Amino acid sequence: MGAGAESGSVNGQFFISLLNPGIGLLFAIAFFLLWLNRRERYVAYAAGAYTASALAFLIQDVGPVLPMELQRLPANLGFLATGVLFAAAIIKRYDLPIPWRAMSVTVAVSITVFLWFLIGQPDIAARILSVSVGAGIIAAMIVRSLWPIDKPYLIDRVLFWVAALSALNLIIRPIVLLSFVGGFDNYVGFQQSVYWTTVQFSQAMVSIVAAISLMVAVAIDQINELRRQVDDDNLSGLLNRRGFEAQANTALRSCLDEDCAVALMIADLDHFKSINDNHGHAVGDAIIAAFGAHVRLIGPPGMIAGRIGGEEFALLVPGAGIEAARRLAEAVRKGLAAACADRIPAKLCPTTSIGIAIGAPGTSLSALMADADQALYEAKRTGRNRVRAFTPKPVRLAANGG
Image (cartoon, rainbow, N blue to C red; front, side):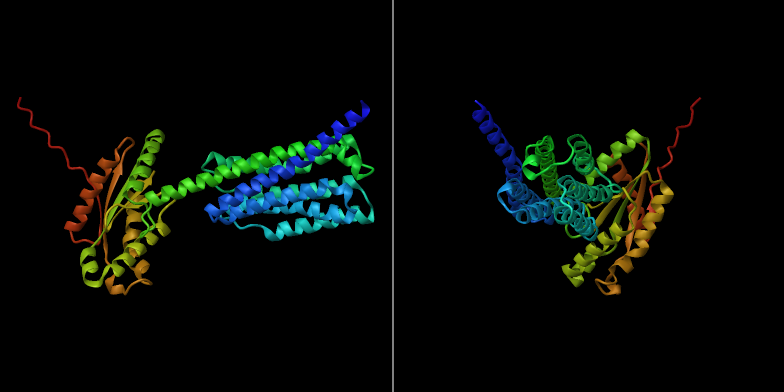
């Protein structure tokens, strides 16, 4: 009976030992397959993180049959490498600078302390703290990197909180648990402790949540890329008409909810067709690209800009009044020549005419565009290369026959 119970305990411990290597290997393969489909560096970092995790747990949990120096150091280096690569994956997804130097210093300090308590003054609990706190500090670097940026999607906030909770878990968990269970006389005692079992299951849960969150982020990035391919105009770098109308209508609904005005500008490149006909499509394409880059450079936050025709562009600015719209339109008009300067000869750069319309909350996009078009026609009619704002015609009241 006693032998059977002992055998069951060993089998249970063996199963738990394989839990994290199995999870790590599964997600390493999954992220590698995702990387084959989407060659993004952050996906490769995620695959590397889960590979390192699988190897680290595997090396650690076959430890008792290996000499100390062949097991302890590479296993714990693997745990720290997991943290570094996972931090790199999340931070790289947002195209933020990866703090390689700070993470390298953290790893170096953690391993130095670890080696002291491995060779100089052996202490299993101190070694656990040195590596766990180091990994927690690395997770905190994710939090620091993501803290100031916008998080438009739920998954962005989930990744932030996964990193924050991982940092707290890695730093606080060993301190709390070790204060209850005390130290360990040897590695066998460590593997049979409540702390070891808690680490195995808590790390498995964190690994699964983090992996699923990052996979959802990869899927969202893929969807957004497909949407950009449908909604973007590759030549100008702005939205195409479909994308502009979709985003503009969304912005107009938000303005209705927030009771704010909105400004719409329609710009048309003067004599563009003759430039295209006389100097070729390459020159015309360069002008379109220069205009798009110019608008993106000077446009205010929240502006929605699109190429809605061959040489016609629309700019929607939520919350802008007539004066702000006029200043932006003049900046677009006056800066176009400089924007074209490094692409085509100055004499080939066209001027632009711009019409402005201001909409009250509840104004439809079609009504705004009709008003802006009328103002644009007025700018063309009065000589081109100018800005005109739509002015409603006064309503003539019929005389009272009484």
